[in-house]
Length: 316
Image (cartoon, rainbow, N blue to C red):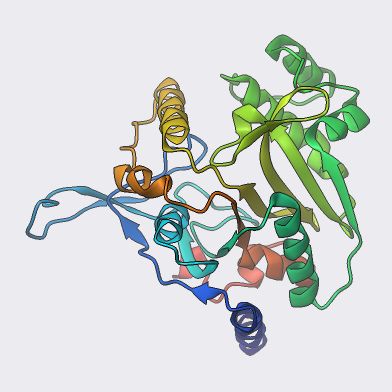
């Protein structure tokens, strides 16, 4: 236990020293909010506020990410900022998941996606004290190299056939093309990544842009300006060149709620406070979330998150 405590303390201190030296401010944003996350892939922890005032008996949520609050600070000209603390996601418990985990999330004003990607790689190397090689793929290139499959052109029927041909048995029927693509990624592509190399994946389909800007690749495909970083079989980081258009963001939130309804999940109230301030964000800002527990797992080459957290969920 003492070694585990020391290892975590050293990494948390190193993170804070790194950002302090670069004049990036740590922000202490709420971990409870009156708004949840509408992403259909995430389940929110919910409670009810029983105190006085206009929010009496209002549903409250433990945050899945500090993103919305941090972007409101960016809209008030905070400059580059970071959050290092707990976030919560219901329904997640496995050797690589726990419902309460430590997240590092940061936003760099005037950084584009490439600059932020390079910083993520640098930070992983610095915190792990290892010089790890890096390979980068676009989403299209990766699917073509691994499966000779164009993810932008393929139909749901064709994607279903790929899963069946590769022997992937599903306990449910995917409802959307993106769900098929996610299953192919997790079952057929991610397991092929070299565990000793940092893999960076970028240029996702626009339908998976989430809160990222959309552009076009050289083939004319609409893509989200986002990236993910993998190492030692773990997804460590997910970053965006951030969308700043509240009208487009509202449409995406509404689309997510429609998918939630299709899945039998309750819609989540849209964060109007965030949307009201979104247009005042810097025109160019990029942000990324990194799982610190997973980074510790990768750095120590362990395969169970309980080996790096101080109190496993079942003992908390």
